[in-house]
Length: 356
Image (tube, rainbow, N blue to C red):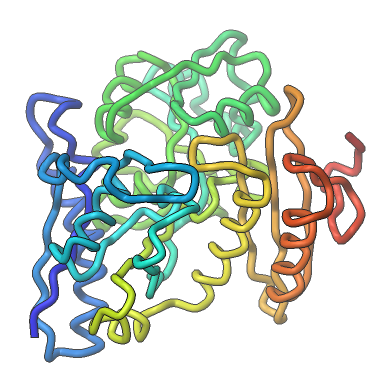
């Protein structure tokens, strides 16, 4: 039997540069190949076709009826192809998948998660000024930056975190794929950027991923002369589901069971908790909300939550079993505190030890 796997080529968009780098093509092939390998290892009786879609799905824009209206995005275009029978499996960057999806499209599997953290990438000039300062790691690296340093990001969440942890720097809008942003940063335009570690690792096509315990991302030719410094997800809250891939199928599809068989339960549990926080706070992927579910290894999870409200960044932490954390999130999301507010108590505490 044959199944077709479709994914967006967001990192390969031709509109960002005249020619697409070979390493970016290879990076995207890695994401699709991870899905194919998992499927084939599970059942060698399937023949798998990988489709990488870009503008070919433009006719599907806005045709999916979602709660609150249609959402025009690459992720919903892939969903439309799935529902139209043009693909059997849609591969999504889970953090970009809207909270409200079509009822006939279900996430049947989640692959093991890549690094969920963000990284601070500094250009050659900035890196030279930090040379030898091994203490300038993580959040300390932001604090060590000169006043008015421009730090590029297009994310409201990252902009809010910069305002909280480094109010002396200036968040600057930056667009383009990962390779384009790194190239601009190398030229000092801007001198620093914040990226998802998972995307950076994928662009390095197979080199060692960032380790949260390291001061620096492993050196690569792409970052020659630059520094990539991991930001701790316990305090620099990543986007909910960042680093995870969601495998979506049509309800009733014969491949649903095949995909479910490769589902990674710990990753599914983690991203479900994080996305529940996003939904409870009334946010979408463009909102200033971050969450990371940390597995403690003793049957419990620690849920780190951060969100912007009233011009400030608020942090909350709760520790319990996944079932109790789900109930805790549902409690204030459905009828407890007002949307956008998570007071200390009721199972949550402020990790800074302060109050709001």
